Length: 93
Image (cartoon, rainbow, N blue to C red; front, side, top):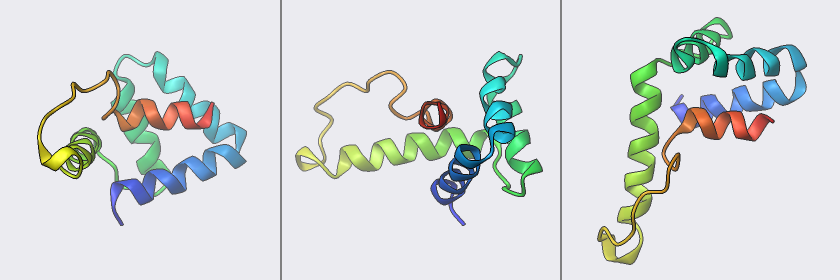
């Protein structure tokens, strides 16, 4: 299962279970938010690790850019555009 599928499933669980949702949202206050987030993912049965999460966001963003405008680098990256952690949290708020 790829990262996107796992995050989609986790997001659905968080939207239906307030306890899970709060656990994910509370990671924002952890000393290492992404590590805390990934730990919860693993506790819920989804093998997601920090570097995989970070690389997946960057890879996804790069693929989108290659698929538009003839594949050239014509636009600057917006802040958070490749951050699956922040996008996940925004989706469950």
